[in-house]
Image (cartoon, rainbow, N blue to C red; front, side):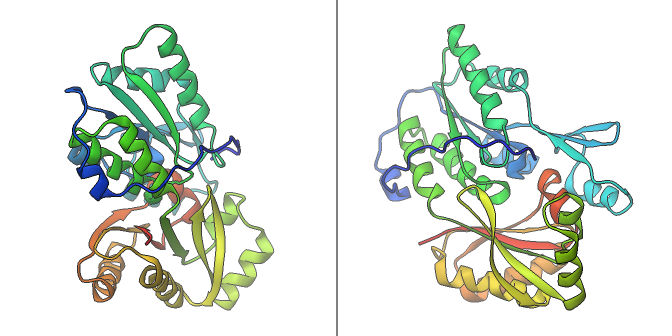
Length: 309
């Protein structure tokens, strides 16, 4: 992902689902929800909630793939195990956003919830597309939103927005809810190895060698638009236990939880049972880490995304 920072939006007051339910529906035209494929929202989830996905591009040497169209997560991890050089990624250009936005020409509003501006210039492309469409008199109002998230932190926000849009909630209410969620996203994960992060230039070779030799695993979180270390443990199992500890301490129980993995589906099922032991009313969705983020985690990542108290 490219390094291109822009300012984030101002956070509004918290907005709850209960408040959203009390707001009358707006116009007959629905708000259309868009996001990047880096949200890791699968085609099935996108169809379930009526979400428009703008595809990112993955490049293996001269081979070009549209994320979740030409390549899916299982195919990615197969290719990663045999390639010597990691693939690169490219975010959608303004013309791709423009083409996608035109698909919702009959909506009252378009809300495009972008991945963090601190790791990608994608939001700039979306903003350029908005300006071009505004200039030509495109009917829907377009709102470009910086989630300061990626992968399933972003997915959680997008699906919440889509649920509100499907109930006929106005754009202003949806944006207020997004402001609340942006400040209350808990995203924690651990990787079996840092080798793929090293190949992608995310960590130094010496640190990777020492960590893998000693069995040391950093526990990572995604907050304020960037990945941060929140602890170091001995062994992958201890890392998963620490991730679940954060859930127990911080989660809004009874809510939707994304349990994400990179080619560890059977293990993820066991982790789901441990989440239910903590929070029996949790709504756990087990999903694959998608192609763009999976390049840096490689096979063997386990994490969770949830709304904090």
